[in-house]
Image (cartoon, one colour):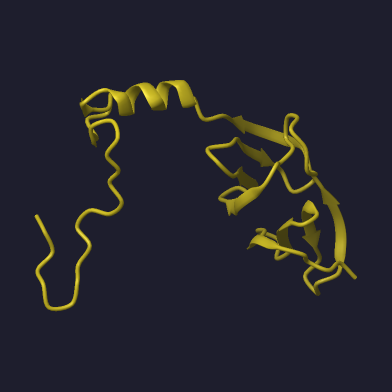
Length: 132
């Protein structure tokens, strides 16, 4: 039996098996259709394909398993057998430089001035029209 300490996410593979990502201890677990644990992989750490504090997990089309780390951390993708297929890192320097500039990001997204934080835009509230 595999107990889950902190469920990060769950998904179903094309063959019906269930995949979970646990944040404590950090593991991706593949379960058979009846729920029995078949095997697990990944772990906590700071190396490639390791997670410090996973915050999101998804099963993408084609049965690619992706976990995202906290604080603009990396995203890692695996095949159901644990093979490593994707590694993406957030370029914090580039992101900070874009926020320091007033105007727009390279893709045209408006950015606030440095020191200002935009939380939500266009939130519809009961009884009041949505801005914009």
